[in-house]
Amino acid sequence: MKDMTFSTLIAVFEEIFGRGLFWAMVAAAAVVTLAYLYVLIRDRAVSWRKFLLAQLSMPVGAVAAVIFVQAMTHSGFEDIGGPIDVIVLLAVAVVGAIGMAILVYTAQSLLTGRRSEE
Image 1: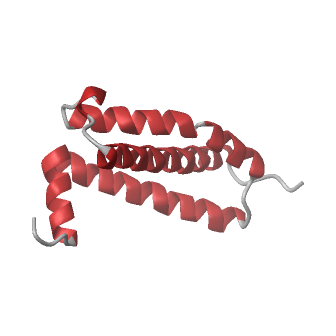
Image 2 (image 1 turned 60 degrees about the vertical axis):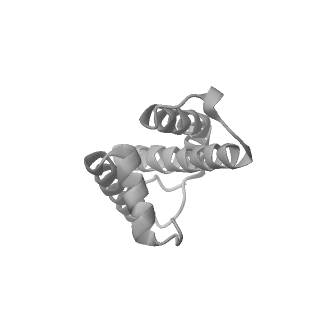
């Protein structure tokens, strides 16, 4: 892999997760992102109570993302070979935590409706 291009990254992710699962995850991320933007535009403000509850779910998202990637790559923690592996796992955990927070905030907002005027 001489050059790292966007198409190379897509090919690597398709190889790791499988073509169907990868594109399903991309579609799910797009849907959640659009729903999140819809909620922010609809409410015109961030509900700090919902935001706090979403932040409390972040550790669950971080652990779930790391376990999911470990399962998909058929690896274990004993296969960590060096600093770059630790950096990648930390990046996966951060992305999982942020994704879980956005998902929880969006789900709360969509299920409870518009925020009440305080």
